[in-house]
Structures are given as structure tokens and as C-alpha cells.
Amino acid sequence: MPVRLGRPRERSSQPFLRFLARRLVALFFLAIGITLIAFMLTQLVPGDPAAANLGQRAIDDPAAVQAFRQHYGLDKSLPQQYGTYLWRLVHGDLGESQQTHSPVSRDLGEFIPATAELAILSILVAVFVGMTLGVIAAIKRNRLTDHLLRIVSLGGVSMPTFWIALVALYVFFFKLNWLPGTGRLDAVVSPPPHHTGLYTVDAAISGQWATAWNALQHLVLPALVLAAYNVGLLTRYTRSAVLEVISNDYVRAARAKGMPERIVIVRHVLRAALPSVVTVIGLAFANVMTGAVLVENIFSWPGIGQYAYHSATTLDLPAIMGVSLFVAVVYIVINFLVDVLYGVIDPRIRIS
Image (cartoon, rainbow, N blue to C red; front, side, top):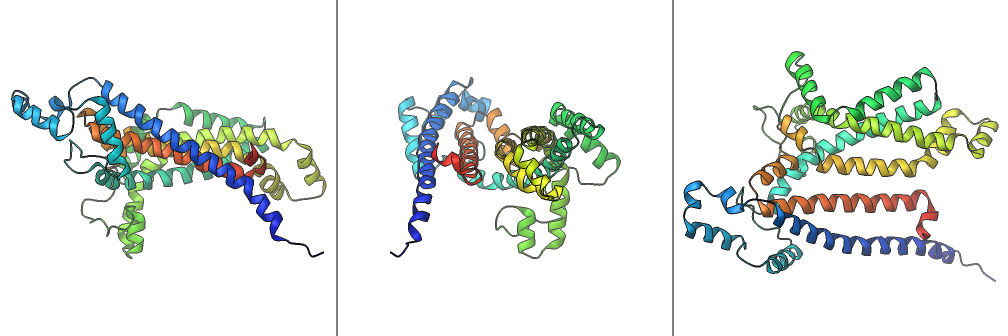
């Protein structure tokens, strides 16, 4: 009887597809709940948006205040406002910012790439340095190297990010003048043609290598500041994860077979320790994408953090809702990707 080779593979893919379907359904209901919570929280913010956005003379004019409330739908009941928000959201409309008087979606499209460029470089540095130091600390357990790396990781986790930013700005920009201090480009350098919003990538696509180098120089200092905390965090978690695996029987068997230590660490130890580290990497990236407010303000980085700060200080409700939705989407997407990576790394998770 001929053997059909296609069926086992189809069966093996079904648990993974069901795994993805369950995650997607859960994410849909989670997104709806987040929009409701974010909407209710914005209504609990003390203060009057009209008073925060209109001048004192306009506030004294009831007609101006009424026109402002009608324009932004603030004169309607809360259920009507939430229903209108969901209807616009389905059609890709996040409303109009009371601060910039432009669509919130356009504002987010301008500010998110700057933060994304900063976050990507920061997390790449943190992952490479943190995981490397964590593996070294685990291999050299209870030796001088391990103790030194644990002190370094504890310092990275303990020191406030804004303090590291101020010290780095003073030392490397003001005193040594090794790196630029603020902004994404020098004042005399024009932004590259827009393709992705990432200046280094756009300049490279356009062949403007001098602009790309200038943008990379401006990236280094704030990216390293953001990476400092995550380097300490990943060093500690990687060390703990590797120590849980490195004493297992299959690791001893691999060493007994005469495998090189590098192969044993990469293929057997690090792969088994990867799931817990992947969770930390995902959360670290989400935190950098959504929590770089202080660093962006210190380095005058025109990212989503500065936009969120100015929106909060002016009670710009559409912008606050847009930023809240962006934060929710980042965490939802990161959690979904981490779940998928779990299923890829460890197939047993697909049937859970």
C-alpha cells in the first residue's frame, strides 16, 4: 500500500493553527476591553479640556467654549462619545488632536518612527550585551567574573534612567564632545526623503550616507541610555535561566560525547533557556517603545514620549486616547509574538 507523506505534516500543523486562532480571538476581546478602559480613564482625568486648550479670554466667552465642545464631541453623553470613538476607530479615524489640530493618526505616524528607531537599536544592544554577559556569568558561577557581572547588572537595574541620561549627556556631549547631544540630526543637516520614517534607513535607501552617519551618531547616546536598564535585566534573567538548564543530564551527556563547549552552550543550554528570556526581551522592547518619555525629553527626541507628555499637559483627549491605543497595541502585538515564539521554540506549548 502506498504511503502518503502529506497527511502527517498536515496533522502536525493543525495544533499550531488552533493555537494561533485561540490567541487571535483572545487578542480581539482584549483590544475592545482596552479601548473601554482607556476611554473611561480619560474621562476621570481632572480638568477641563476647553480650559486647557483655549486661552483665558476665550474661556470667558461661553460661545467659544460651546463651539469647542461641539467640534470635539464633548457635549455628548459618555456612551455616545464612546460609540462615536469606536465607529471612527473601525474606519481608521482616531480623531483630531486639540494640540496640533491635525488627525491623531497623522501625528502618530510622524512620532512613532522616531521612537521605533531608538527602541530597535536600544533593544539590539541590550539583547546582545545582556545575554552574552548572562551566559558568561552562569558559566563562571560563584567566581570573580560572576560577582563582577552581577554587580554591573544590579547597577544597571537600580540606577534611574533619567539620571543615567543626564550623566551621559554631561560627560559624552558637554565634556568630551564625542557624540551629539539632542535631536535626530544636526541643525545644518536636512532630513532624508521619507520612506519608513527611520532616518538611518531612509538615508541609506536614498544613498545619503553622510546623513545616515549623522543620524546614527545622534541615535547612539539615547539608545545606550535606554539599553542600560535592559542590559542589567537580561543579564540577571539569562544567568538564572542558564543555571536552571546547565546541570541537566542531557547537557552532561553532550559534554561526555566530546562536543565543544561552545556547541553545548548554544545548541543545548541556550535553546532550552530561551523561552523565559524571550518573555523578558518582549516586555523590554514594549517598555522602551512606550516608556521613553523622560529620555526623549532630556535628549529632545521627537518621539511618541514627547507627544504623550504634551498631550497629557494640555488635556488633549483624542491624542491621549491615540497614545493609549498605541501603547495597548504594542503590548498586544508583543505578547502575541512572544506566544508564537513559544510555540515555535517549544511545540508542547501549542496544545496547552
